[in-house]
Length: 139
Image (tube, rainbow, N blue to C red; front, side, top):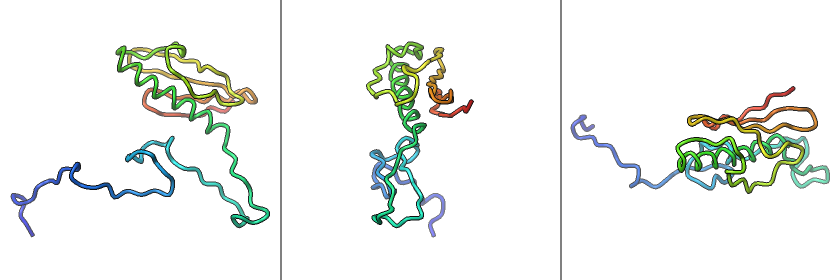
């Protein structure tokens, strides 16, 4: 075994990535929750007559829309050195999630923001902040 003076760190750029996931990530970074797959459990066998079609939770659609706000706020801050409270200044091309208020209500300072939308059926609030934290407050 080599002593400490003979060991050296191998630069990451020279190594190939050896990651895998069961769902496509589209980028080599598994720390993006918006890129994770969804699992739906069932007591039926896949492909059977009773098999059910996956139905996305509307809250997940709302989180995806807010994730787009998060990305556009990051771009905006890089260009203007502050976040914006005006959703019209962000290029929100994502269609608004069905059943939620849109555009998002945004509170912002130079260093932080909170964007939120409200579920119309039960007044639950889904929000995201500058650190990517996305939460749901059930009313």
